[in-house]
Length: 136
Image (cartoon, rainbow, N blue to C red; front, side, top):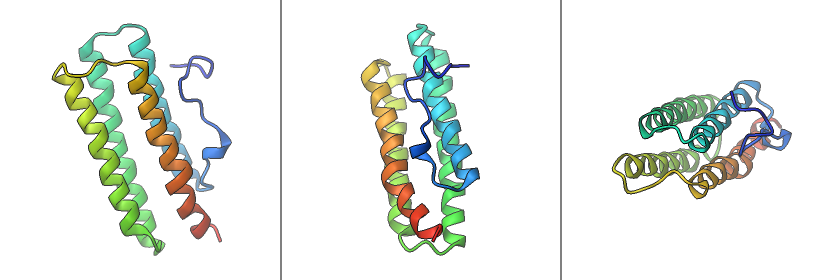
């Protein structure tokens, strides 16, 4: 387990969308990114890093599917754009994983910072937009 002081991506209340189930899923995604960072810093082997990357991608897809289903059920006005954002984000992370597994990419702090920015900007920009609409 990664402690908050070791984490590259600590949870902040600013990331809360006010929907407990979504917040818990976001915390788990953040935890997976922190776990990937910790494994990289501990110089864990590529096989272990690949496994953590696979978990991150799998859970990201599960989270996005859950979020899209919830947004559809609540008639979110920008659902199509939100789904497109999810597809693009998933594609980017899968591409990173594929490049890593092919030996074209090393796990570096730049990759970790990209993953952090990827999720933080999605939560702070896109997810908080639906939160404002749905929590009215």
